[in-house]
Length: 289
Image (cartoon, rainbow, N blue to C red):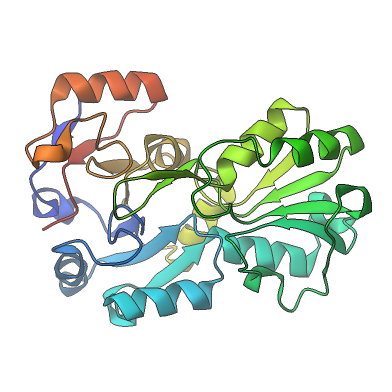
């Protein structure tokens, strides 16, 4: 396993024309920017590089770009933004793909507390009971959810009815600013698959979202994907056949022993990569120039 250990993106930036960059864990922690993130984006832009912010957020595009702007990531820091939530909304609106074509209009929604923006404009009716639903729209988990105990009764009943599930955020966990972990929709979707359910995913590591990114900049190659999840960011890049850079201080930070802010330990990195079954082209502690 040969992984290039970097101190900053400047060491390899000139090798690539297109950068697919994750949000949470790379640019910010959900509330505030990581030091040096905006400066690094601006360095890439100054060199004529194309940037697509590629996020597994279940938020629609307009919401994600507004939230980034509020944190200090202005629209001129990147060229495009692609979110899994926007991809789900577009698929539900068009209903021209086999999985979506015959869906009904009644859904049970799993969401971040009371956030139902993803339903707006789609003509959907929210129902409370699995028995009344045509499908599950899996767009979030309640704040602080740490395990599957709250969701299993719904998932077991839905699997027995063979209800389709749409997963608008394939991430398994998120890390809060205080370092605590919460499960994300990808965990409930994975559990549903284990129960025999049917799931359509939008976002990383699945091919359609990369095709969307490349369509935005068809002439910009080669590409480098940057993210903090081996399964989603690095795995998606490997599937897409492009190079990748793991930001080690994100969701794998504890396993990689980065609490002291030091360099990435090669032995710990090897263990985590073997566990996740994915290997990045490069690794560096944080997103910086």
